[in-house]
Image 1 (tube, protein in one colour):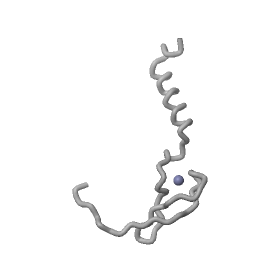
Image 2 (tube, protein in one colour):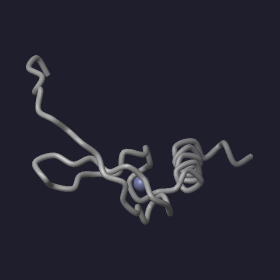
Image 3 (cartoon, helix red, strand yellow):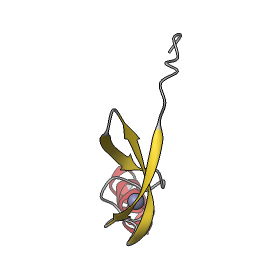
Length: 65
Ligand SMILES: [Zn+2]
């Protein structure tokens, strides 16, 4: 990323079903972008944590004992 575009980027307040509330969404070239709130793609934090633990267990079966 050596070249940085200096195009105007605005944001609109829009309903985000992932956040469950109105959040700012990026808008560029009149196209609605993504929610500006940080959230994992389709996964809740709890789910993510559970997946990580499951991965750990699968990697180290000894972990169960
Ligand atoms: Zn959101």
